[in-house]
Amino acid sequence: MKPSVRKSVFAGIAGLSLAGTVAGCAPSAQQSAAQETQSSESSAAAASSPSSSALASSGAGYKDGTYTADGTYKSPNGTETVGVQLTLANGTVSAVDITEHPSNPNTRKFQGQFAGGIADQVVGRSLEEIKVSKVAGSSLTSGGFNQAVEQIKTQAL
Image 1 (tube, rainbow, N blue to C red):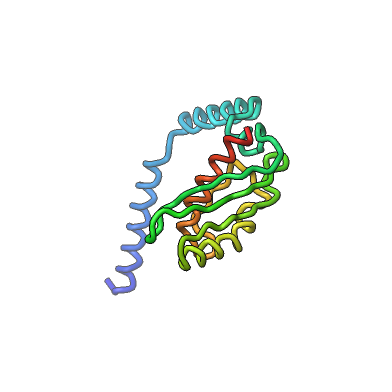
Image 2: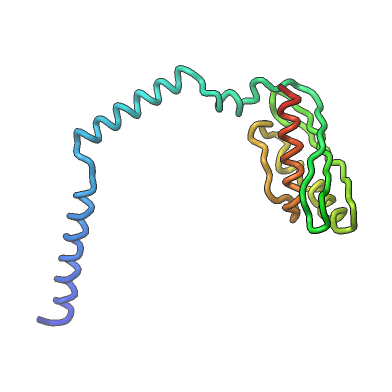
């Protein structure tokens, strides 16, 4: 046999083997029908009664207003504090203001960067979904911000 014919035969056998393996993994028609029925029933149940996460993400339960809290976080220089002021309208953040409490020049730099970039991350979003990790190159300040947001969630209930 020529090398090109051997490659074709081998490729054909490999393809049949793969098709047989995949077909063996597929659920039976009965299983598929049962899964689709369960999925439809679950979807109908979810549509008829809103879940608590759906209510929370819509901002239901949070009172409009302006709330303030301080959050702390650990930096290489020790414990740092950042002040957070959020304004809520219909459970959505309409404004954010950061009060910097730097203990040294590095903290001043990173809290300043954070303050300059946080509005892009949170304004227009539901209070319930706010949790930031790194903003404008500052990752540690995020921990203090997130801590303050949790306090504000409690205040706004």
